[in-house]
Image 1: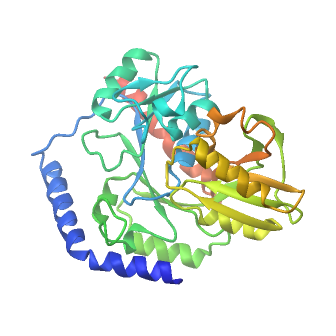
Image 2: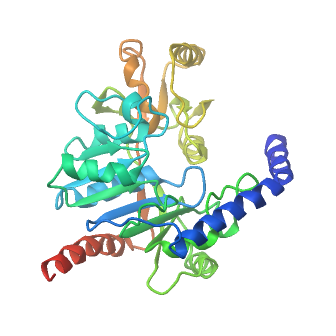
Length: 362
């Protein structure tokens, strides 16, 4: 542990009284929902929620994309997100003229990758869902992005993500820990996915984590690792490149947890340099000039810039300025361990199938 990490951890421990107060407030809120003092609204419609109990990157966006790829050829689906750090308010349905400033970076990422599905944003999902169903009356399922802790909506199927290195079972409330909900809230999920696991996770360690989580009857627990696809040019998906020992890389990212990316570059590239920005950072021209200056300072002819898909949508407005810069996007996906991907797929599809089968018999 370096000095900065030690200082941050020590400082967060000093904030324990605030964490206890926060935890008390969350516990009271959950009690009010559990006893129906506060009402949750459910829709007679298949709604799949992807979320977590902690702040930070657990892989929600790649999981939403996994579900889109799984379902879009069989069902008319939509994604609904909050649209964090967008410049608009209220419900917005993406169109061919939409920008990241209007809907946020992750929804824009979904919209660019899957132009054939509906992508919408709205802070109040309880208001946005009826709008979305009215705009797209042929929809057959909605995927809610990052909505597990928002109990105003009672989704029919909850997928809870927890990061291998920071599992909710070993965490504490903000600001001392990273939890924004009670540990016991995991009981509301139909599926729990332990994300960002080592590729060689052993059966023994899997069993230990299952014992630690202690899933309730009927809950399924899966394990995934990060799978990186081939980097593609930010303005031309057909133009790809490789990261190898002959390439020097400038990593530019504004994400919650860049460690897996850094580990990848450390393993495969000749050398890498890094420019960090805050999560969801909106890049401006000064940022761009600093990035170009840092890139030009790299004294190696075989060099590229690597960024994430989430960051890439915030660079699209600089098409002219980046025209001659080799900037590539590194896509990531969830890869299920222990050959359990088909079981996960079956559980998700069964939820939708069972919903419509029940409707036919009503």
